[in-house]
Image (cartoon, rainbow, N blue to C red; front, top):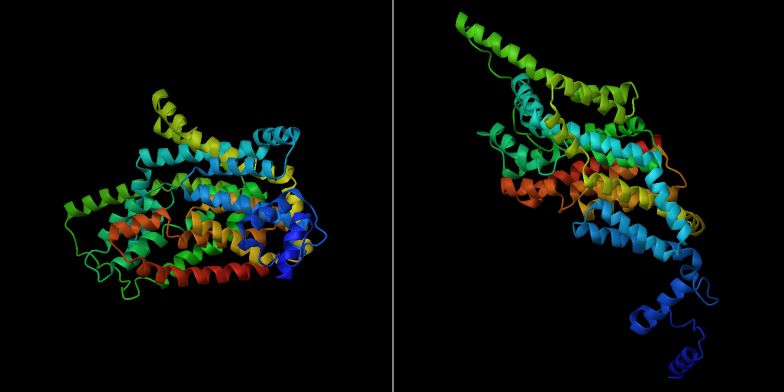
Length: 464
């Protein structure tokens, strides 16, 4: 009873009582008092260690990160989400007007923003030409003709269609997987796993996907280095895909055709010529990859050269070119780049980068769990690669004091596996819907495959 009287007296006189922090969060009035202490007082003589100014930066960033995840779950555009998060950072850190204007100026004029804008714009134009000119359809048909074994034929459909970063692509490849597995003793869950899993290795390495492109831009790690480091994950996705599916399916060659009369031989020769034309359809994507990975040409220049060759090859007129450019220069691309780069510069100019790095250093928080858990949570909650890259990578760069390849490729692997395991991932939702598959039937293959990839990511982290 005496203790309660003293507590009341202390509160009335404005003194801090060391006894009440243990139960303070349980009472609304005390919670408000705690909040005011955290955000308006830098130090308290009687405060515990976590109550100090150093931890205030961590609490602010956690609040920003929570806001990002909530808005992404509400299906906001990633660009708008990160722009809103930048505004929240400006409020929490009380950025002066001059710092806000400097941040906006850097966002618009930074060379990385310009390169990113042209790269994403040209990717959209490239994707439209491949789709409208039936290039992808010919690539798919060529793979079905060339591959003589049943397993490669089945997985070639989601693999090839997965090369293009299009929403709903899983629903496009699902009927092809269904057709190629007709007559085979395969469960809907196994078919769903094949359709879902084999369309995703490209997202780790293919510069047509904006996730790895944004990761390279934020961390300032050369795109080629990022691709080569992530190549292990792409190969393991394919390998584990075969390991956890089609075990009972014999990988047999097609039976040799019987001798044919002259007319049928001529027809076969015509089919071989058609196959050659179908094989040529692989050239545009191959050219981009060779220029970026082998010759180290920047992506926007590689795409620009390839697009010029495609314009000339298809002899496109003004109307067709206007439609392609209109599709490429989309508002969503501008908003995405503006939001990502604004958040990056807001983190730096607000003082969050310096404060967060100091907090982690002085409090002795281990770096490795942060590298893994922060992007994994972003990927799991958003189901989108852009979601975890845009929300967590600027924070990770500030925490690590500069991006290192082994750290960022581990973070990318962790975030990407969070995306693959996310129940809100659109590809998983569409695949389950088409095959009427049980979620656990797919997850019991996805989870062990993901564990193998994560183990490889840890090995690469310690080796690089």
